[in-house]
Image 1: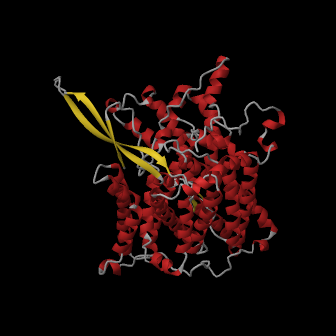
Image 2: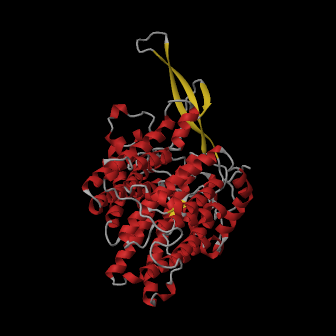
Image 3: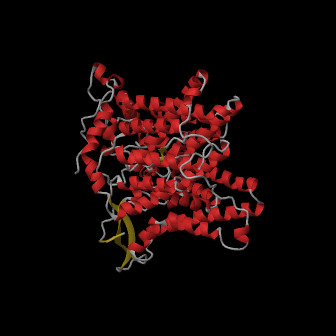
Length: 600
């Protein structure tokens, strides 16, 4: 089933009076999301029975499990041990069950993020400073309840439509911020190895963390090479995480000096029980009324964070480079996220949310890639008539297994991991390995980030630049000026995240959106912004859930200046077309030479 969503009935164009106000027509976005996606539900199940689903399940399980445990270790260290292994596994399982069975975007993986870890222990520090440490469970529960209510209001009143105004200017800044936070957490985990363990254990931890990072990068990179047969390099890339995890866990147990080194390991806990001695249901009704209302602004800030973080994750999982056929549904999924916020809050587990660096990984894992042999010819440098023949491998995305099965299987695997035997297996893993996980996931979003790409461009030697690069039209200093706004946004967000005011960082991130739409068109010209920036949501299957593609402000500003129609054109921005490092997808290019195809 394939439809054209460019003329989807859900839009707000040409509406007059009260009908043009989103808040005046509640549930409209949710209704169209469900109506648009429901016909695909059976195919979401049927399309899940293939090899790509199996490989995607294994890969995304490890990509989700390892960071979840890493963030749990961070929260345990900073919340007096309130959050532990079972809370992390329970949260990931809850989100996977709900979103695999009921969401409109089942490819979007939801779990524990570094930002909710930061949010949780910042509130803990506030509670300690205010002398209500013993009320922390009830306080964080009410923060979650208020966040759930504001999530529901956002979805009901169609406010997820405003995600269509997000461009790569803010999403690249947010992605860079998240990557930096992940790397900082990796370093903090290694520092704790020295503080809580021994000096030899600390140095061995550095070796394991960096080696794990290198191993995953190397194994996933095999898929981009021409080594071995296609099925061999595909298998190596698909199972890079489990291979590296098993190897370096085993390495830490080599008899002799390595085994005897005082390495910190994942703590052991009872199966299906909370980490601390308490019932699963938090007695949130016992929180004094004053603190109930103190939790309200915190809940609103958490909603701002999830509004941006979760929806950008959904956009990342549905990037235009993936040949997706099934429609998105942002309003309904955000409503579901409110439900998981409420449930997670009252049972005292971390609130699950969309995973930004890992967002495209699930879709990438479920994508079948084809190796293409491109043959090109060029004249000999000596001017001879003889032509030199070159062979080059390119990789194209053939199709995506758009299904719910891999997400649901991941939920079952999380539940299984909460059992006693597998908790013992987790206990054998060195904590240093999770520093490596932080480095892998953090680095994943840096090389392909538009900020990093533009920095490298302006630092490169002019004569070696691609003459077809649209940035060639711009002055190097104008690109640097544009980058300055992004770098300041990232810098302020990272800086505030290291203080007690860390819960306020979502305000900075969200403020980048009006900055782009109101201020930037007054500083940069239309051609400059069309080269440097592009809408993050750029495909009709995604935009259908947001009311269609908006007109960019520089287009509107130019039309008003000229007093007539101005063609919007297509953005040639480099930021939206850049791949994440570690993904096997690559553009096939525009070559017109002879081609031979082979399955990757």
